Image (cartoon, rainbow, N blue to C red; front, top):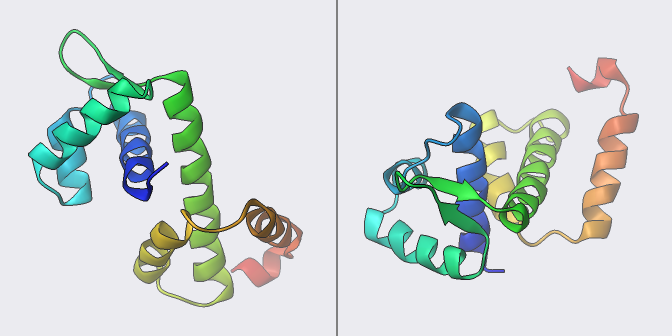
Length: 127
């Protein structure tokens, strides 16, 4: 799946956690800092692929497959952000930005290794 489509699904997931069943295409556009027509085109494709659906009000909802992809990408985003900010002493803003790029290309093996490393890290080192 294309990186941008993963970002759209991840954004819907994040926005949906803040406001369940009330995610509009304009909300996705504002969150990502892109145009509404770009989001509309992407949503049409994601709907054709079966990753999202729209409710009677036109709100965006993740399907089971869309949620699985979004959850996987979001987990990577959170773990990689944590690695960069805690272990590399990078600002939260930079860690977030860099994690957004890395989450799409990191191998599953490396990602699992990072998760294991962070889970084994003594609490005193984390802070």
